[in-house]
Structure formats: structure tokens, C-alpha cells
Amino acid sequence: MKPQVYGVCTLLLLCILPNWNLLTEAKNNYDLLTENFTCSTQDVDSQIIKDLNCGLNKNAKRRTWHLEFTLKKHVKEHDFLMRIVLPRQRPLTDFVLIDLTTDGCQLLANRNQVPLMRLGRNIMDRFSNFPKQCPFRANYSYYIRGFRMDLNLLPAVDMETAVNVEFSYQSKQQGIKWITGYMGARVQRIPEKKSKG
Ligand SMILES: *[C@@H]1O[C@H](CO)[C@@H](O)[C@H](O)[C@H]1NC(C)=O
Ligand SMILES: *[C@@H]1O[C@H](CO)[C@@H](O)[C@H](O)[C@H]1NC(C)=O
Image (cartoon, rainbow, N blue to C red):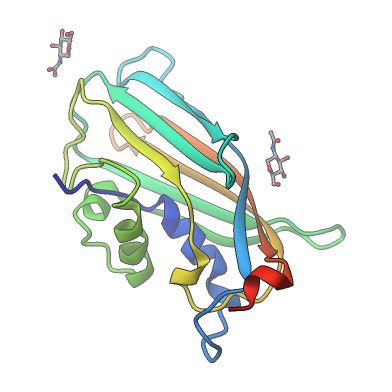
């Protein structure tokens, strides 16, 4: 019954990586606020995707996002793409933190070689019902819900920044991105009051 996961959060972990301050206390003074979350598909003929929807839960005190989909057919081999960008003021160019393509089945099975990808996937366990291995089944409603990144799980983060994340599931054969998710988020300082203690 234990659900399984993915590397969406990985991006969040990875994007914060360069700013980790490994020498300080684990308690974090920063928070990750999701500002928007949208998704789309290139599968316009609905060969793979049957239903797809996503969005933000704005009524929650802390915004969370969700992504739900149902597939028309079993999806075995696929790629998972992730791109994390820290937008910067001109004349600086945006900083591309991560831009990777990895085997989706390996990621599901947690056999990815990158430790942060594995950590990210483990965190996703709490928020999704993704399978522990390929395939994604047809006619089954998969979800990621209520996703919140708790920065306390990470070593201290020490800067405020906007973070744009894009991730896709792509078929190996046709190259179609059957799901792409876009997230705009912000790492921000928690007001002093709350961060003490
Ligand atoms: C999924 O459900 C549809 C409609 O119920 C059915 O026609 C189709 O064969 C199912 N696909 C699989 C792979 O089970
Ligand atoms: C989503 O948020 C990002 C980061 O805050 C922002 O750059 C982008 O314009 C927003 N997109 C939409 C559609 O609001």
C-alpha cells in the first residue's frame, strides 16, 4: 500500500544544492512557496494520455500543488526530463541549475545513480501513488497531491530566490512529452519570529 514516486521534488532538492550551507544547523530559516503550477501535454491525439489535470490548492494556508493523470495504455520505457532555472535580473542571464534527461523506469525503481534523485523520490513517496517500477498502468488514476517541500529536511538554505522548474515525461519511441509540468516557486526567508525555536 506504500505508494511510490518521483523526482519532481528532486528538482527542488537539486535547485537548492549549490546554496546549501553544510556547516550550519539543520534548522532552516527558509521556506519554499509555490506560486503557480501548470501542466500540458504534447499528446494531442490522446494516444497515451486519457486525462490530465493539475493546479494549486490555494485554500490551504500553505499552497500545495497537485497533478493527476490517467493513461490510455501501459507506459513502460520512458524518459524523465528536468530543468531548474534560477531567473536573474538583466543583464545577468538566468542560471540553469539542472537540465537533465534520465531513464524514467530507473527513477521509479529508485535505481538512479544520483543520491539526490533518490532522496527526492523518497520524499515523493508521501505525496504520490506512483508505481515502484515500470510500467505506469493504463486506466489507473495516478496522482501527486498536497506536495510541500519541507526545507527542514535539507541542510540550511541561505538565500532567497525565484525558482522555475519544468519536468516532463517523454516517450522514448515517439519523443512526445506526454506530460510537462511547470512550477514557479520562491525560496523565501521565514519571518524571524517563526524561525526561532
Ligand atoms: C482501459 O479501459 C478502456 C475502457 O474501459 C478499455 O477499452 C481498455 O481496453 C483499457 N485498457 C487497458 C490497457 O486495460
Ligand atoms: C509563475 O511563477 C514564476 C516565478 O515566480 C513567474 O516567473 C511566472 O511568470 C509565473 N507564471 C505564471 C503563468 O503566472
